Image (cartoon, rainbow, N blue to C red; front, side, top):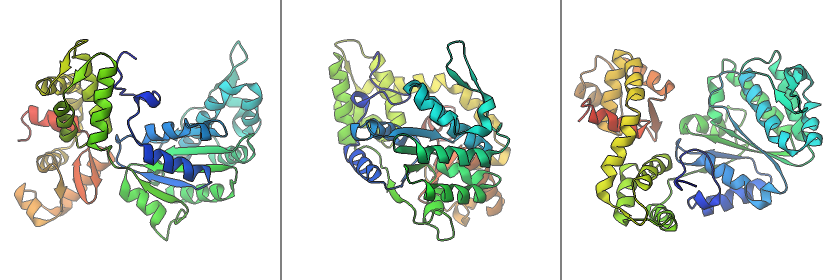
Length: 377
């Protein structure tokens, strides 16, 4: 690859850092028919870990694997469209006999599938276009239960279903389907810990005690440093250990940000040259400048109250007890209810995130941009 620090998607084991123990545990549990819930903040690498696990020989050779990302869905109809499309697109390269097994099962939307001039099927359904999503969902699960191989289905950003207009009914329906689907193992992945915890650990919810839960922490500094130095060395370059460690500390070990900065540091290092700590700030500035217009747009989309609360959280870096008197008085807010209302809107738009009762700016580069523009100190 032109640049070994991959910033989009899974590129194979050579470009995947560590996660040896997590991979072993997940593969062992999944292949022994345990449904799992993988919970971690976004951008820490859980989706790549899923791809990595599904690429292991013990899974790849014996299962049909499907990774369903429902982050952009807003209803059961959207969910069904994404679910069906991923299954169809995954099976299509495996030959006519394989994809026809699925095609013949989903009778409710067969008219939405056309064929190109070479006789290859083309999925024509769009988001929310299913006339009867419950029927189509029944058909999808009927296929999974009768597929020619056992299946594994990973549903990414699973907490999204709690935002559906009929979220509680969807949750109950999925739980019923999954209980009856003996040919498929499910991996539910989510980035909002409090919502995922409610779904799987609350006695009043349909999925209560139906899965084994697993967390995902940042890759250790030692492992990531060795990984980065190895990739530089393999390509005729080098990087100081201190440079990797500074980047790691700056971004709390969150994989997506590490990879983005290391990608720029790599492209700025000449063949045979060495990357040093002095190059880090220029690399970060390069990334921030590329995204400056985007951050300006996001900032302008906030209401005045949301903007003030957003800046207060950014200045705290990790804000606790946001409805408490200390936070309210420090930033001169009118009331705790106004702060809570603003925070709710910021969370919905992913401007901020919540972890262990702390609130912080979701995008680390956005946080840095705020500082460089003088909005926070």
